[in-house]
Length: 250
Image 1: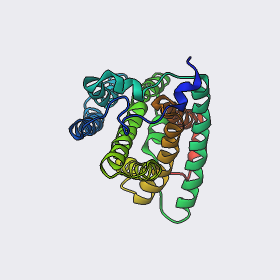
Image 2 (image 1 turned 45 degrees about the vertical axis):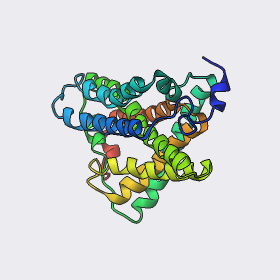
Image 3 (image 1 turned 90 degrees about the horizontal axis):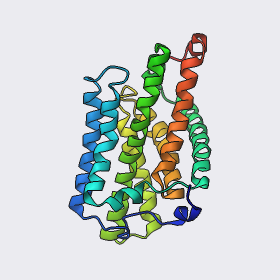
């Protein structure tokens, strides 16, 4: 563990620290984010075994991170900062906040719009014990990858707004925060049968909480940990809860 000094550090890149990335470098990183997402979706149709699904999940996070390392290794350490005790303790705090906000927003949306069930819930209940363990292992790189493809576009837009448009940091952060939440929601449209309200409002709200974990610490490990903890809690409940608990929910 390291001291909490890392938590006081500013967000990387937008002021040229540790390096100022060019427009082409940002374009390459965003292309690698998209490539990783496509690898997850398309190769996930090829590698269907419980443990072979680790391959597309690893490519999902690996492609943009390798791109960062190829540009400058300092870029990786600026994103994945050392963990302090405070940072570790913030992970479950933001995980619980994420669950609370998600449930609250979901109830509000469901009172006005139709919502679609997450197909993962039904799939998880059909798993054997070994398949469930393999599923949890696969979600580790996948959920870190979801943070990477959310935070890198956030930092790219923040850098553009501050450097090219001369926006004040506070306004640039707010706009980048909202835009990337909507982009994250858009990526979930196929998962929720193209349900616009569910993807943009419920998933977008959850994304804003997770990005807030990054804003509070400047450390992608914190929002990744919060994401893993909150999703794993849902997965464990779905796996161990009796079938009757889900009657009428799908």
